[in-house]
Length: 316
Image (tube, rainbow, N blue to C red; front, side, top):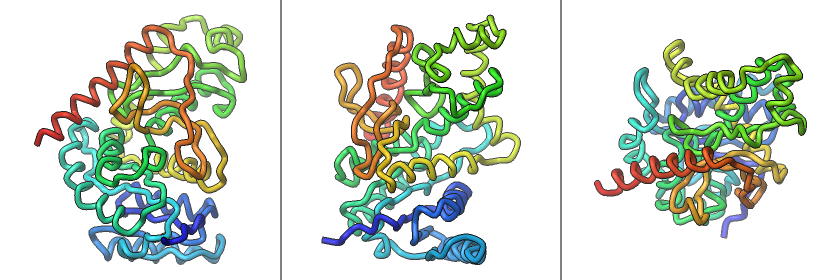
């Protein structure tokens, strides 16, 4: 049995998201070793060299291009590999292309790394988290996706701008699919314990329904807007990867809306995002936040949307 190195990470896929994540993790000083793997070995070598040349300004570490044999003791394996989302393409349009890619990647990871945490970042993240769980045979707590961690950050950012407060003081979640059927869980949202509606009125905002609608749409369309303007999104998700890795490596037991397999009465057999306790064992438990009936219905619909896609893909 290979002993896991808690200060080692592997990144599979060195496109925009993989390389930005590698850079964010180097800056975080969480890991002393990062191995980069890409179908294009030159690309992985180039990214590793580029980041390595800045290490004299940071902290000593090893970052290098490698093979699947090199990941055997990595505590966290981050999978960003996949076709990118093109302008006008939904995340679900990507599914067939990326499931095929995962069928070649995940068995390789499972062959060489038996005990690490598998963090799925490629889109559509919920479907690919489900596929990664099935293909790897890992227990559910050790296979999860970045989910709506970035969507939730976008929600907090937009609410912070709207209310003129530090976004870190806002407690609110986007749940469900990372995509078009995602849900802003308004009924449990608060600003430092003050219910959101009440805080809005304290700040002179009274058009609650309209503002909630506009902000939720703003979150949902963020990726499309960025892709239209600069062809890809990568800094926000790289910072999300860093945040999730912090929770794992430091065993923080942080509550993050990662995408993981659901086993509830209403929703099961599908991976989607709900707040979960994240630590060194991966997903250590779900956090049942209060939802109103409308949100519960929307969450069930989001799960059904994902299930339908899974069934369509698995039929082939």
